[in-house]
Image (cartoon, rainbow, N blue to C red; front, side, top):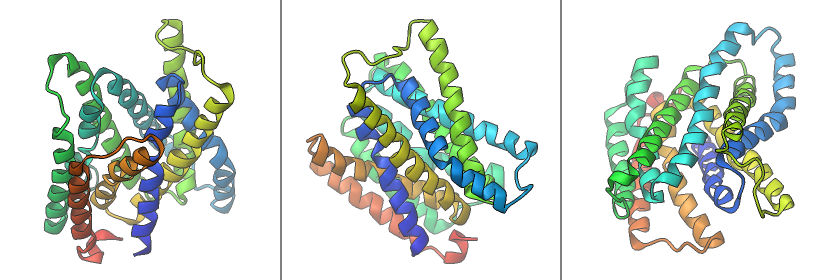
Length: 296
C-alpha cells in the first residue's frame, strides 16, 4: 500500500503546476526552463551524494541515456503550455490525459511489458471519466487544429518520457537519473527560449508583473510539481508497472479541480465529480490486480 500512497502524493504535487502556471506571467518557454533548472539545482546535493555512494555507477553511456528523456520532458513542457494558448483548456487537458492509452504500446515496444486484463478494464473505466469531463467542453473547430496538434504531440512526449523512466529504472539511484534529466532539460528549454527571444516570439521579462511574486511562483513550480511531482513519479516507475503510474497520474485533474476551486474560485461542475468517481474506480481496479503483476 505504501508505494500507492507515495505515487498519490506525487500526483497531488504535480497537479499544483496548473495553479502556478495560471498565476505566473512569465513566458511559458522561460518558465519551463526555470522550473527544471530550479529542480535540478535543488536536487544536486542528492545527486552528488548518490554518486559518492555508488562510485562508477554513472558514466558517459548513462548520460547518453538521459539525453532523450530530458529532451522529451523539455519539449513536453513547452508544447503543452503553448498548445494550451491555441486551443481551449478542455481540448488540451483532454488530449494530454490520453497518456494511459499510449503507454501500453510503449511499454510493450520498449520493455515487452503487457498490461493485464484487470489493468485494461481499470484503464478503460478511468479514461471514460477523463473523456466524459473533456467532451462536455471540447470544441471541434478548425481554428483550434494547431493547438490540438501541439497538445497531442505533448501527450506523446509525456508518454515517451514516462516510458523511458520505466526503462531506465536500472540506474543505481533515482537521483542519478532524474537530476541530470532536469538540468539538461532546463538547458534545452533555455536554448529554445534564446531562439524565441532573438525572433521576438518570447518576452524575456514579464511586463507589469511583480518581480518577487514571479520569483516565488517559479520557485514553487520548481519545488512542488517538479521536484516532488516528477521526482516521485520517476521513483514510482522504478517499483510499479508503467500502466499503474499512468492511471494514477490521471488523478491530477481531480486534484487540480479541487485546488482550482479553493484558490482560483473555479467551481467544478457536477460532471467533474462523476468523472472523478469513474477515474478513482478505475484506479482501484488496477490496484486490486495481482501484486506480482504490479511490482517487481
